[in-house]
Amino acid sequence: MEAYKQEFINFMVESKVLKFGDFTLKSGRKSPFFMNAGAYVTGSQLKRLGEYYAKAIHDNFGDDFDVLFGPAYKGIPLSVATTIAYSELYGKEIRYCSNRKEVKDHGDVGILLGSKIQDGDRVVIIEDVTTSGKSIEETFPIIKAQGNVEIKGLMVSLNRMERGKGEQSALQEIAELYGFPTAAIVSMADVVECLHNKPCNGEILIDDAMKASIDAYYAQYGAK
Image (cartoon, rainbow, N blue to C red; front, side):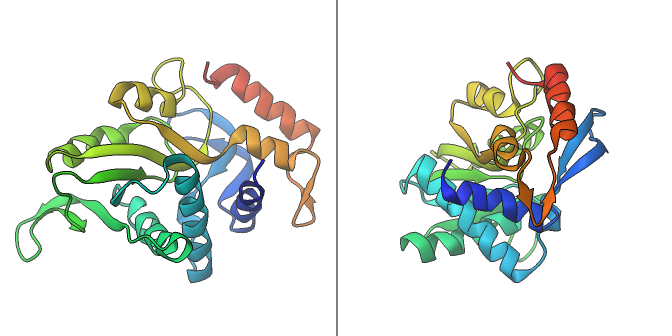
């Protein structure tokens, strides 16, 4: 596992973004782990988060893209932080763009904020985590409506590795449905490998009992 992936897992725990216990997800599923990207709230956290995303995007999709699109609302700070990090790490100026939930009819009109998307633009979409693909379902037509646009891929921070609407994971379903690649900074398999019976901040977060709970969850909800 790349060093930055191990660092990112520790960073999620330190930032109280990734937690272990008993959680009820929006889907109704009972999960032994939960991720909340809204817990990244400080300048230093957002700086580091942007750097991890930038490294993962560079590793998976290279530099051949022009715009980083973050669906509203959580995708907005993600796209801003990552475009800054991309400039600092790789010396390439990427434009950021997000959508509004409502179309603005005065001043800076339209449904987009940040950079406009133009014919010929190559776009990478950035999100926190994808469990159902609903945000892509909403934003894909918005992006494609801007002109002759190529979507290079979707990057999320954590692949939960559980079934979406069918037997595959949400990331796999998106890739097949929309025809562009998907990737994550880390997967839950990476998290378990990194934390099982290993201390993080002086605490064992995934002991044998928690590992058994995670295994049971995937036996029920794991993607094929």
